[in-house]
Image (cartoon, rainbow, N blue to C red; front, side):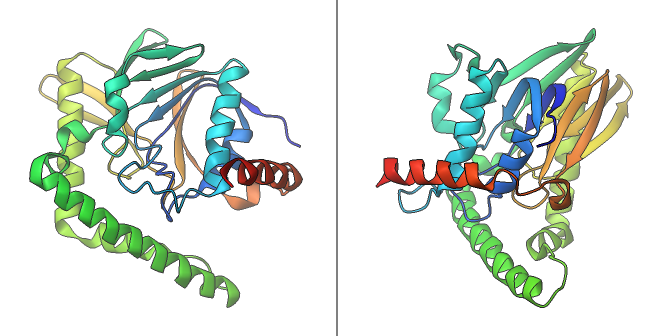
Length: 271
């Protein structure tokens, strides 16, 4: 097995454990390949909007087990609540060993201020009646992801590359493109007012690293993307940020036996 990469800070978001679109096995491979000092889970890790007893497979449970294992081995794990796991907000500021639950986070990174939060605070569709509509829309999005998975299964059989049709549809909708642009600008503007060097969000499933400037200053806007379509994470090392993109060919099936044992254990617990 390859040596784990030592990284001071890793940020992931929008995993949506408990949904059909979640790439839990891929995320587990990534988590097992790194040894971060601090792991920030920036919201929507567990999808409580879609959570049911009928669908929470062993692969999803194994992600939680790995995160707990990392915490026990010394990684500082900070869980920032999002809109899909907002039920956890009543437990904010909870601390247990190396695990912390918060609504937002400010870190000092080599003398520079990083403001980290999920981002749903800027989204009016997560409040009131719009929130109900968003949940209904989320069900449609889950169905689209499921259909996309079936199509890619057939494409794999035919020897063709996988495609994210759901992402293509979303990126082609002008309102969605406009919303993302407004979201990024708003987050950057507020961060500049707060005199931050970095602002880190999730929520919109759009991995990004770009400098935003206005008349009051500039800030590096970062978004960790998601583990539904993009399979991305943010990594901070040697005073530099980078966007990690999961590639299947970077991993081997060397720990498939370990995963089988874990699956058997989880299945016994849930049965």
